[in-house]
Length: 337
Ligand SMILES: N=C(N)NCCCC(=O)O
Ligand SMILES: [Zn+2]
Ligand SMILES: [Zn+2]
Image (cartoon, rainbow, N blue to C red; front, side, top):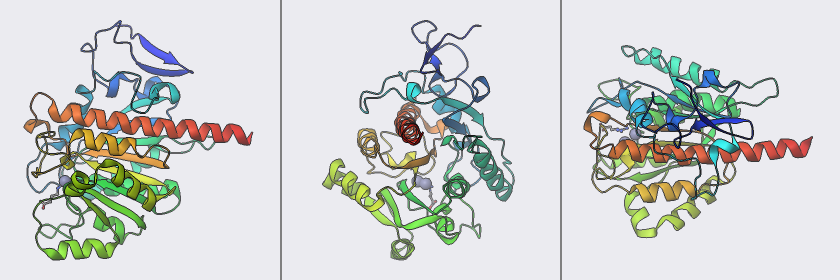
């Protein structure tokens, strides 16, 4: 059937839900065009159906498609950021990476290579910014490798999660969803002056977990800190610490309270609300965001798309930040001409 899409500024946007009901047709993120339907993308949304790194409930391999299905109701104008992301930039859904479910090391190589391919600079030196939908948190490591390679330097990291994910090994395995950020620090791909966890909570294996995490350079804004200090104070501190460094944002959906995101593999009580998470993200406007992921959505434990809708809105605000960055980059390039 013919697709009736919204078009603006030469950018091909979502299917027009006033002409084709939003529940019709195959799902792409926000009903956006597929990457193969556009000449090039400024922002690419890509899925990684991989959950071989989990320590508890499996199922995040189905996360990206669940978020796509739950994103049909997103509308083109974002009032909270006062911008229309799909007008500011060409945003496209790049589909899913094909990754080996039986070999974690190989999967990690594949994810890194796919992320590099999707962000390869064109003849004008412009490269797409990537928003990845997981997948379990293992995938953040190869995504960070690719992001720091493209940035040409170690990157700042804002990590939203109930968990530290800086543990060493599980059952002797180095590459799991509980270990990506320790590996990233060891590999020297993070700017350890500017790395923070947000939303951390819940029981740990021992106090040593926190001591080691601090030694790696991480700052922690706990879930309780968000509650006690409030969003504005938290945003102020994060902006202060990160400044204009190239910034990668990794969002484990279990940062939300299980009431806001039941569909995840390692839920912990006492999490932040979806409103708080969205408000913190909106507070990052104007920072040098180079890439982001939303991981750990496990639809088998979801109800009524609670988690899927939360994740799709989080992804929408991330796309808005990335598209805003594209328009600032373009304005800067115009200025140079
Ligand atoms: N990255 C996520 N979601 N969870 C890590 C949990 C590690 C553990 O089982 O202790
Ligand atoms: Zn987590
Ligand atoms: Zn995590």
